[in-house]
Amino acid sequence: MSTDEMVVFFQDHATGIAAVAIAGMSLLALRKWFAGGVCRSKARLDGKTVLITGANIGIGKETAQDLARRGARVIMACRDMGKASEAAEEIRQKTGNGNMVIKKLDLASLESVRHLAEEIQHEEERLDLLINNAGIMMCPKWKTEDGFEMQFGVNHLGHFLLTNSLLDLLKKSSPSRVVNVSSLAHEKGQIHFDDINLDKDYDPYKSYRQSKLANVLFTRELARRLQGTGVTANSLHPGVVRTALGRHIMPTIAVWRRIIFAPFILLLLKTPWQGAQTTIHCAVAEELEHTSGLYFSDCAPKDQEI
Image (cartoon, rainbow, N blue to C red; front, side):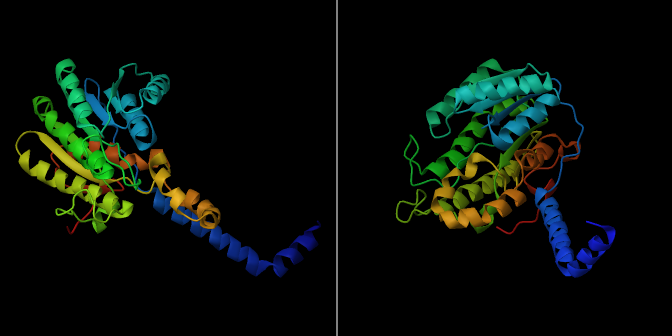
Protein backbone atom coordinates (compact mmCIF):
# COMPACT_ATOMS: atom_id res chain seq x y z
CA MET A 1 0.00 0.00 0.00
CA SER A 2 1.41 3.38 -1.08
CA THR A 3 1.54 6.46 1.13
CA ASP A 4 -1.34 8.06 -0.78
CA GLU A 5 -3.45 4.92 -0.42
CA MET A 6 -2.74 4.82 3.30
CA VAL A 7 -3.84 8.45 3.67
CA VAL A 8 -7.06 7.76 1.78
CA PHE A 9 -7.70 4.63 3.88
CA PHE A 10 -7.32 6.51 7.16
CA GLN A 11 -9.50 9.35 5.89
CA ASP A 12 -12.24 6.94 4.85
CA HIS A 13 -12.11 5.01 8.13
CA ALA A 14 -11.27 7.81 10.54
CA THR A 15 -14.42 7.39 12.62
CA GLY A 16 -14.01 3.64 13.00
CA ILE A 17 -10.31 3.89 13.83
CA ALA A 18 -11.02 6.58 16.43
CA ALA A 19 -13.78 4.46 17.98
CA VAL A 20 -11.48 1.43 18.23
CA ALA A 21 -8.70 3.56 19.74
CA ILE A 22 -11.04 5.10 22.31
CA ALA A 23 -12.49 1.70 23.19
CA GLY A 24 -8.99 0.27 23.59
CA MET A 25 -7.84 3.10 25.83
CA SER A 26 -11.03 2.84 27.86
CA LEU A 27 -10.50 -0.88 28.39
CA LEU A 28 -6.90 -0.31 29.44
CA ALA A 29 -7.98 2.39 31.89
CA LEU A 30 -10.72 0.14 33.23
CA ARG A 31 -8.26 -2.75 33.53
CA LYS A 32 -5.87 -0.55 35.50
CA TRP A 33 -8.71 0.58 37.78
CA PHE A 34 -9.79 -3.02 38.44
CA ALA A 35 -6.17 -4.00 39.16
CA GLY A 36 -6.29 -1.88 42.32
CA GLY A 37 -3.56 -0.86 44.72
CA VAL A 38 -0.10 -2.31 45.16
CA CYS A 39 1.72 -2.82 48.46
CA ARG A 40 4.75 -0.51 48.42
CA SER A 41 6.23 -1.58 51.74
CA LYS A 42 9.81 -2.85 51.67
CA ALA A 43 9.58 -4.25 55.21
CA ARG A 44 11.68 -7.31 55.99
CA LEU A 45 10.33 -10.22 58.04
CA ASP A 46 13.57 -11.91 59.03
CA GLY A 47 13.07 -13.83 62.27
CA LYS A 48 9.28 -13.61 61.95
CA THR A 49 6.90 -16.57 61.68
CA VAL A 50 3.81 -16.42 59.49
CA LEU A 51 0.90 -18.87 59.17
CA ILE A 52 -1.25 -18.64 56.05
CA THR A 53 -4.31 -20.82 55.45
CA GLY A 54 -4.97 -21.94 51.89
CA ALA A 55 -1.42 -21.00 50.89
CA ASN A 56 -0.96 -23.52 48.08
CA ILE A 57 -2.99 -21.70 45.43
CA GLY A 58 -4.24 -18.31 44.28
CA ILE A 59 -3.75 -15.25 46.44
CA GLY A 60 -2.69 -17.41 49.37
CA LYS A 61 0.24 -18.75 47.37
CA GLU A 62 1.17 -15.28 46.13
CA THR A 63 1.05 -14.00 49.71
CA ALA A 64 3.25 -16.86 50.90
CA GLN A 65 5.77 -16.18 48.16
CA ASP A 66 5.93 -12.46 48.94
CA LEU A 67 6.42 -13.00 52.67
CA ALA A 68 9.01 -15.72 52.01
CA ARG A 69 10.92 -13.27 49.84
CA ARG A 70 10.92 -10.88 52.82
CA GLY A 71 12.68 -13.51 54.91
CA ALA A 72 9.81 -14.91 56.98
CA ARG A 73 9.39 -18.47 58.19
CA VAL A 74 6.19 -19.36 56.33
CA ILE A 75 3.81 -22.06 57.56
CA MET A 76 1.46 -23.08 54.77
CA ALA A 77 -1.70 -24.59 56.29
CA CYS A 78 -3.50 -26.44 53.49
CA ARG A 79 -6.06 -29.16 52.89
CA ASP A 80 -4.28 -30.76 49.92
CA MET A 81 -0.80 -31.72 51.14
CA GLY A 82 0.36 -32.78 47.66
CA LYS A 83 -0.37 -29.37 46.16
CA ALA A 84 1.01 -27.69 49.27
CA SER A 85 4.30 -29.56 48.89
CA GLU A 86 4.58 -28.56 45.24
CA ALA A 87 3.77 -24.92 46.03
CA ALA A 88 6.27 -24.81 48.89
CA GLU A 89 9.05 -26.19 46.69
CA GLU A 90 8.22 -23.68 43.95
CA ILE A 91 8.40 -20.83 46.47
CA ARG A 92 11.72 -22.12 47.81
CA GLN A 93 13.15 -22.13 44.30
CA LYS A 94 11.84 -18.66 43.43
CA THR A 95 12.75 -16.90 46.68
CA GLY A 96 15.77 -18.80 47.94
CA ASN A 97 14.00 -19.12 51.31
CA GLY A 98 14.15 -22.71 52.51
CA ASN A 99 12.21 -21.96 55.68
CA MET A 100 8.88 -23.15 54.30
CA VAL A 101 6.71 -25.49 56.38
CA ILE A 102 3.55 -27.27 55.24
CA LYS A 103 0.83 -28.33 57.65
CA LYS A 104 -2.41 -30.21 57.16
CA LEU A 105 -5.55 -28.13 57.75
CA ASP A 106 -9.11 -28.99 56.79
CA LEU A 107 -11.26 -26.04 57.83
CA ALA A 108 -14.37 -28.19 57.36
CA SER A 109 -13.24 -30.18 60.40
CA LEU A 110 -12.94 -28.53 63.80
CA GLU A 111 -10.88 -31.50 64.95
CA SER A 112 -8.37 -30.73 62.18
CA VAL A 113 -8.28 -27.07 63.26
CA ARG A 114 -7.64 -28.01 66.88
CA HIS A 115 -4.93 -30.47 65.87
CA LEU A 116 -3.09 -27.82 63.84
CA ALA A 117 -3.36 -25.27 66.65
CA GLU A 118 -1.90 -27.78 69.10
CA GLU A 119 0.97 -28.55 66.71
CA ILE A 120 1.79 -24.88 66.24
CA GLN A 121 1.72 -24.17 69.96
CA HIS A 122 3.98 -27.16 70.61
CA GLU A 123 6.46 -26.62 67.76
CA GLU A 124 6.67 -22.86 67.27
CA GLU A 125 8.28 -20.38 69.64
CA ARG A 126 6.47 -17.44 68.09
CA LEU A 127 3.72 -16.44 65.66
CA ASP A 128 3.93 -12.93 64.28
CA LEU A 129 1.33 -13.10 61.54
CA LEU A 130 -1.83 -15.17 61.14
CA ILE A 131 -3.41 -14.76 57.73
CA ASN A 132 -6.84 -16.39 57.46
CA ASN A 133 -6.98 -16.64 53.69
CA ALA A 134 -8.57 -19.98 52.77
CA GLY A 135 -12.19 -20.09 51.70
CA ILE A 136 -14.93 -21.64 49.64
CA MET A 137 -17.37 -19.72 47.47
CA MET A 138 -20.97 -20.36 46.49
CA CYS A 139 -20.84 -24.14 46.69
CA PRO A 140 -23.91 -26.41 46.69
CA LYS A 141 -25.65 -27.19 49.97
CA TRP A 142 -22.87 -29.08 51.71
CA LYS A 143 -22.18 -29.64 55.39
CA THR A 144 -18.92 -29.68 57.30
CA GLU A 145 -17.77 -32.68 59.31
CA ASP A 146 -19.40 -31.05 62.35
CA GLY A 147 -22.75 -30.43 60.63
CA PHE A 148 -22.40 -26.73 59.83
CA GLU A 149 -23.28 -25.21 56.48
CA MET A 150 -20.06 -25.45 54.46
CA GLN A 151 -19.39 -21.81 53.61
CA PHE A 152 -20.11 -20.55 57.12
CA GLY A 153 -18.10 -23.43 58.58
CA VAL A 154 -15.01 -23.05 56.40
CA ASN A 155 -14.93 -19.29 55.85
CA HIS A 156 -15.81 -18.27 59.40
CA LEU A 157 -16.04 -20.96 62.09
CA GLY A 158 -12.81 -22.76 61.20
CA HIS A 159 -10.83 -19.52 61.17
CA PHE A 160 -12.61 -18.30 64.32
CA LEU A 161 -11.46 -21.41 66.20
CA LEU A 162 -7.95 -21.32 64.75
CA THR A 163 -7.46 -17.67 65.67
CA ASN A 164 -8.72 -18.05 69.22
CA SER A 165 -6.61 -21.17 69.70
CA LEU A 166 -3.46 -19.28 68.70
CA LEU A 167 -4.09 -16.02 70.55
CA ASP A 168 -1.72 -16.80 73.42
CA LEU A 169 1.14 -17.39 70.99
CA LEU A 170 0.26 -14.23 69.06
CA LYS A 171 0.24 -12.21 72.28
CA LYS A 172 3.56 -13.70 73.34
CA SER A 173 5.03 -12.63 69.98
CA SER A 174 3.57 -9.11 69.95
CA PRO A 175 3.55 -6.83 68.12
CA SER A 176 1.70 -9.29 65.91
CA ARG A 177 -1.18 -9.23 63.45
CA VAL A 178 -4.26 -11.18 62.41
CA VAL A 179 -5.38 -10.59 58.82
CA ASN A 180 -8.79 -11.90 57.74
CA VAL A 181 -9.55 -12.14 54.02
CA SER A 182 -13.21 -11.20 53.63
CA SER A 183 -15.02 -9.84 50.57
CA LEU A 184 -17.02 -6.92 49.26
CA ALA A 185 -19.91 -9.40 49.30
CA HIS A 186 -20.23 -8.81 53.06
CA GLU A 187 -21.96 -5.50 52.34
CA LYS A 188 -25.09 -7.33 51.21
CA GLY A 189 -24.77 -9.99 53.89
CA GLN A 190 -26.92 -10.76 56.89
CA ILE A 191 -26.36 -13.10 59.82
CA HIS A 192 -29.34 -15.46 59.91
CA PHE A 193 -29.35 -16.18 63.63
CA ASP A 194 -32.66 -18.05 63.41
CA ASP A 195 -31.32 -20.33 60.64
CA ILE A 196 -27.52 -20.08 60.69
CA ASN A 197 -27.13 -23.15 58.44
CA LEU A 198 -29.79 -21.86 56.03
CA ASP A 199 -31.61 -25.18 56.23
CA LYS A 200 -34.95 -23.54 55.48
CA ASP A 201 -33.87 -21.60 52.42
CA TYR A 202 -30.36 -22.37 51.19
CA ASP A 203 -28.94 -20.02 48.63
CA PRO A 204 -25.20 -20.11 47.81
CA TYR A 205 -25.01 -16.34 47.38
CA LYS A 206 -26.80 -15.67 50.66
CA SER A 207 -24.54 -18.17 52.41
CA TYR A 208 -21.34 -16.66 51.01
CA ARG A 209 -22.38 -13.14 52.00
CA GLN A 210 -23.24 -14.31 55.50
CA SER A 211 -19.82 -15.94 55.94
CA LYS A 212 -17.97 -12.86 54.69
CA LEU A 213 -19.98 -10.57 56.96
CA ALA A 214 -19.08 -12.87 59.84
CA ASN A 215 -15.39 -12.36 58.95
CA VAL A 216 -15.74 -8.59 59.20
CA LEU A 217 -17.77 -8.63 62.41
CA PHE A 218 -15.35 -11.11 63.99
CA THR A 219 -12.44 -8.86 63.07
CA ARG A 220 -14.06 -5.83 64.67
CA GLU A 221 -14.84 -7.61 67.92
CA LEU A 222 -11.45 -9.31 68.01
CA ALA A 223 -9.75 -5.94 67.63
CA ARG A 224 -11.81 -4.55 70.50
CA ARG A 225 -10.93 -7.45 72.79
CA LEU A 226 -7.23 -7.30 71.89
CA GLN A 227 -6.75 -3.63 72.72
CA GLY A 228 -3.58 -3.17 74.72
CA THR A 229 -2.16 -6.62 73.89
CA GLY A 230 -0.01 -5.61 70.93
CA VAL A 231 -2.05 -7.84 68.60
CA THR A 232 -4.00 -6.14 65.82
CA ALA A 233 -6.76 -7.53 63.59
CA ASN A 234 -7.91 -6.21 60.23
CA SER A 235 -10.06 -7.58 57.41
CA LEU A 236 -9.98 -6.93 53.69
CA HIS A 237 -11.51 -7.32 50.25
CA PRO A 238 -8.90 -8.73 47.82
CA GLY A 239 -10.83 -7.69 44.73
CA VAL A 240 -12.44 -9.88 42.09
CA VAL A 241 -9.62 -12.29 41.36
CA ARG A 242 -9.01 -14.93 38.69
CA THR A 243 -8.61 -17.98 40.94
CA ALA A 244 -10.19 -21.39 41.50
CA LEU A 245 -12.39 -19.93 44.24
CA GLY A 246 -15.18 -19.28 41.74
CA ARG A 247 -15.22 -22.82 40.36
CA HIS A 248 -18.69 -23.50 41.79
CA ILE A 249 -20.21 -20.46 40.06
CA MET A 250 -19.43 -21.30 36.43
CA PRO A 251 -21.72 -24.37 36.14
CA THR A 252 -24.67 -22.18 37.15
CA ILE A 253 -24.11 -19.74 34.26
CA ALA A 254 -25.56 -20.47 30.81
CA VAL A 255 -22.93 -21.58 28.27
CA TRP A 256 -23.77 -18.78 25.82
CA ARG A 257 -23.25 -16.19 28.54
CA ARG A 258 -19.89 -17.70 29.45
CA ILE A 259 -18.78 -17.54 25.80
CA ILE A 260 -19.90 -13.93 25.32
CA PHE A 261 -18.63 -12.49 28.58
CA ALA A 262 -15.50 -14.61 29.11
CA PRO A 263 -13.11 -12.24 27.25
CA PHE A 264 -14.34 -9.24 29.23
CA ILE A 265 -14.22 -11.12 32.54
CA LEU A 266 -10.68 -12.35 31.89
CA LEU A 267 -9.60 -8.83 30.97
CA LEU A 268 -11.06 -7.19 34.06
CA LEU A 269 -10.36 -9.77 36.76
CA LYS A 270 -7.32 -9.27 38.97
CA THR A 271 -4.47 -11.72 38.74
CA PRO A 272 -3.65 -13.65 41.94
CA TRP A 273 -0.60 -11.39 42.40
CA GLN A 274 -2.79 -8.29 42.20
CA GLY A 275 -5.39 -9.88 44.47
CA ALA A 276 -2.76 -10.58 47.13
CA GLN A 277 -1.59 -6.98 47.41
CA THR A 278 -4.07 -5.82 50.06
CA THR A 279 -3.40 -8.91 52.17
CA ILE A 280 0.33 -8.22 51.98
CA HIS A 281 -0.23 -4.55 52.79
CA CYS A 282 -2.21 -5.41 55.92
CA ALA A 283 0.46 -7.91 56.91
CA VAL A 284 3.62 -5.84 56.50
CA ALA A 285 2.94 -2.10 56.16
CA GLU A 286 4.86 -0.37 58.95
CA GLU A 287 2.26 2.37 59.33
CA LEU A 288 -0.38 -0.23 60.30
CA GLU A 289 1.45 -1.50 63.39
CA HIS A 290 -1.13 0.08 65.70
CA THR A 291 -4.10 -0.02 63.29
CA SER A 292 -6.82 -2.48 64.24
CA GLY A 293 -10.46 -3.26 63.52
CA LEU A 294 -10.51 -1.76 60.03
CA TYR A 295 -11.58 -3.11 56.65
CA PHE A 296 -9.26 -2.59 53.67
CA SER A 297 -9.63 -2.64 49.90
CA ASP A 298 -6.97 -1.76 47.33
CA CYS A 299 -4.42 -1.27 50.11
CA ALA A 300 -6.47 1.44 51.83
CA PRO A 301 -9.03 1.49 54.65
CA LYS A 302 -12.66 1.77 53.56
CA ASP A 303 -15.63 3.25 55.40
CA GLN A 304 -18.34 0.78 56.35
CA GLU A 305 -21.94 0.92 57.41
CA ILE A 306 -22.90 -2.37 59.04
